[in-house]
Structures are given as C-alpha cells and as structure tokens.
Image (cartoon, rainbow, N blue to C red):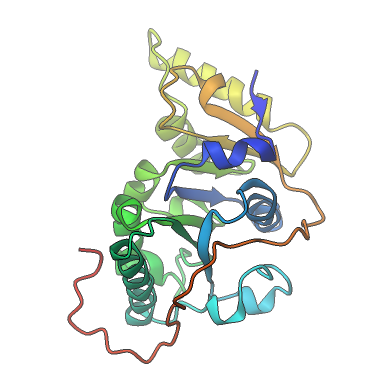
Length: 264
C-alpha cells in the first residue's frame, strides 16, 4: 500500500539541492502540483531565490506568480540558456564564498520538447545540473509533457521522480525499469508484477493523482520509496517566503559569457 505524500513531508523528503523530474501529459495538473510543492511543501526561507525558465510561461496567467517577473525568463537559444545558468551559478559561488550555503530553485518548464524549444537538452546543461547542481546548491524542478524527452542520464541522476498517469507504453517502461525495479525478486516477471501493482494502487480513476518516487531512499521495498500525491484543481495562494539576500543577483542577459567553462 502506497502512502500519501503530505505537505508536511515534502521538505524532508526532497534533499538539499534536489533534482526532480515532473512528467505529465497536457492538462494533467503538473503546474498545479508544482505550485503546491513550492507554496505548501517547502519550508519558509528554504530558498534564497527562485527562477522559472519557460518559453510558454507568458501564455499561462498566474502559473508562476510566486516568481518575480525579473526571474521569469525565456530560455532563448542555446547560448542564452547556458548564460542564464552560468549567472545563477556565479550567484551561488559568491554566496558560498561568503559562507552562505542555502539553496536556490530553478523551475524548468517546457524546455525539453523535441521541437525547436528543446534547448535544455541540446545544450547539455541539464545533464551537468543533474550531476553537479548539488555542489552549487541549485535545486531543480524539471517539468515536461513526456518523460522520454528528459535524457536518461538526467533521469538516473534524479533525486525525485513525479509522474502522472502513464498514457503510453514507452513512459510506463521507463518508470518500471528505471524507478520501480529495485526489489530483490526471483525473476523479471515478478519484479514487473510488483511494479505494476504500485502503478495500479496510485493511478485510480482520479486523473490528478501523481506517483512520487524517491530512489535514493535506503529502503528496499517500493511501498517505502513511493508516495502518491494529488494536484488540486485550484492552485494554492499561500505566499512564498524566500531567505533574505542582501546582494541581488544580476538577471540581465547582456553579459559576455564567452569562454566560461560551464559548471566546472
């Protein structure tokens, strides 16, 4: 039996500088669930700053209204996208040198499709963030319509996977083989049966239920590493309280970043 992920559990279950993939088909509730995470789940002052990088955020009124407009950015082309990430890393590097090791959060929305907007994957920035972001104190929420759009290395390095109902066999296979196959069983068939039972337990007739997996949990059974949650139809309006930061981050896109060795 898979237990519910409650708001009071979120801050502890999501580790420092986590990397979380949130996969959902259109209109399944991933933006509302992300809103719930940030407003209701994470403790006040956990993050020093929050950015949202999305080519479509301006088309969705109120989706990221907890993010200051100056930090609601379009990814643009590959160079522009990497420039944004480099400035955030520089911000964190300065704060770390001053003895402040708190996190910042970046929300990536719709940056992974196979269309011309998929600059996140083409730049290789996401692979580096998934592997090294924790060293810079950068937490990531990566929202996508298709789990397969996120590279396998990012999925494997993720601290959390949140997926809504799997509408296709490819997505279902990824979830089962990469996330739900950890139990010691006598054969592959038994492993799949256990994983399928978890999916059936989580995905009821309620279209807004989401499976949340914590693969780095030391437990060896799926009922311990899996939780279910629900994306409410009406987003929370609770204000997001950030940690006080004396030195503001530069969010302009005019800096010349040529020659910067990204994330090294």
